[in-house]
Amino acid sequence: MKILALEFSSARRSVALVESSGAVPPVVMATAHEASGRATRAFRLITAALRDAGWEREVLDLIAVGIGPGSYHGIRAAIAIAEGWALARKTRQVGVSSVAALALQWSREHVDGRFAVAVDAQRGEFYRADYLAEAGVAREVQPLRLVKAAEIESALRAGETVCGPDVTGRFGGAQEAFPDARAVGCLVFEAPDTTASAPLEPIYLRETAFVKARPARFA
Image 1: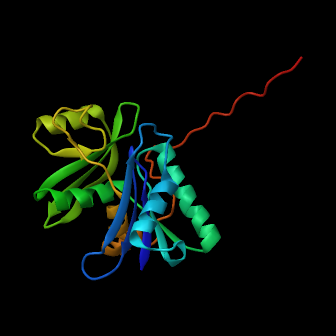
Image 2 (image 1 turned 135 degrees about the vertical axis):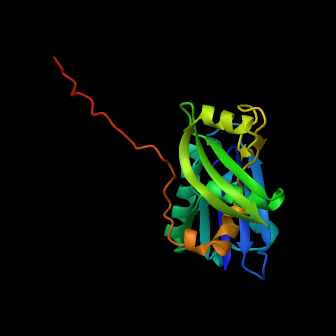
Image 3 (image 1 turned 135 degrees about the horizontal axis):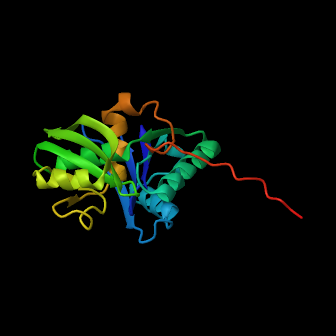
């Protein structure tokens, strides 16, 4: 299976081409850091990755998308690309938690032990999920939830490991980590039960509320 993975939930945007081949899927990845949350050089990255892998667009079997939580614009841009691609070429799509992808990366790049992933949710709150890393595998021990910034600060004071995108400027002792498309693609192979039916809908834990405006009166 040949997968195009898109991860735009943070300022570090990336695309990856992942192919199932043996125990470790080979990967080709292209990355860009976007200073503006509304900027996305998506098609330039996709073209670069396809060129480096020697793949044509027609060979893709599935598009995996990091669906957050994270950048409102970035996630929707990735979903729009996947849905447009599916409409044109009937390519299958699947959504993958960006937090789960980051946890997979962390478990493979650091020592075993418990850690928390934190993502800015605005309004003084953060998305937080807790994992236990063991031999390159991240096992979720507390699910994704909304917490106050004070809880993250308290966890750091207690000596807990906290990682996430752009957290070092907000919390002393936190460690910078960005989800990437390589992990998004690998999760499709390594955790199919958690991704096989995930829809392309952004992960947000707040309920959406609208207030209907009063009708305007005209003289």
